[in-house]
Amino acid sequence: MAINRNSNAFTFLFAIIMVLIVGAALSFASMSLKPLQVQNTIEKEMMSILGSVGVESTRDNAEGNFYEYITNRIVLNHQGEVVEERDGKIDADDKNEPFNVDVKKEFRDRQMTNEKKHYPLYVANIDGEKVVVIPMVGKGLWGPVWGYVALKSDYNTIYGATFNHQSETPGLGAEITEPFFTNEFAGKTIYDEQGKLVSIEVQKGGASPDAPHAVDAITGGTITSKGVQEMLERTFSVYDKYFEKNRTQTSQEI
Image 1 (tube, rainbow, N blue to C red):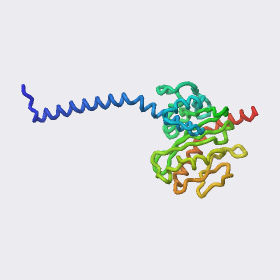
Image 2: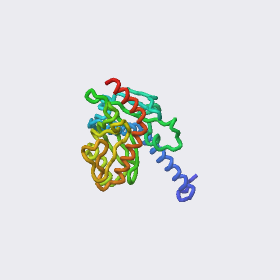
Image 3: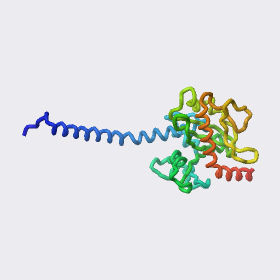
């Protein structure tokens, strides 16, 4: 029986077959590339975490540097209590792995009760000094901003910070990624002399270099700067109970 290549039935059949072939090819390509995509995402986050403690890394050495400097990965509950701890190689499929905690979801999911929320924290050893790294997410002018802030072993003094964004304006809000902004945070403290959490003010118009709890805002990037400030305040308040408990223990040891 001859096939009528000009018929509507042939056209539809040909289209269906092509869709199935192309769909199968795309699905296979996606599945084949997924492990590489996951690894790239992990390495990118490793670089950001390491950047907050002053360890510059590339995609080639990020994993090696991460396991060299990051000694512990911790998950806290809303009471600041440790509920999970890891110190080996990251398992991308382990739901309890601290590295796999979706920070954005934990902070923003209004349907999730506090009792179900978890917050990751990383412990680093930098030249013999214990440093803790806190991930954070917030909102800039045009979209999400995020970053990592590292604290010294007193759980008060900032060791370093890295920030990033999705779509802030180049030359303005996007400048939060630049060293001239992130370097300002080193040496600042998030608690006042009475032990009250005050976080860091990102101050429009210029902060004094001697101000213990303030840094200069980005010129022309006021909304993004305030987004970073809100992100810092909110995140530090979540970890406050953990910081306070460990600060007390550190003081007693001294």
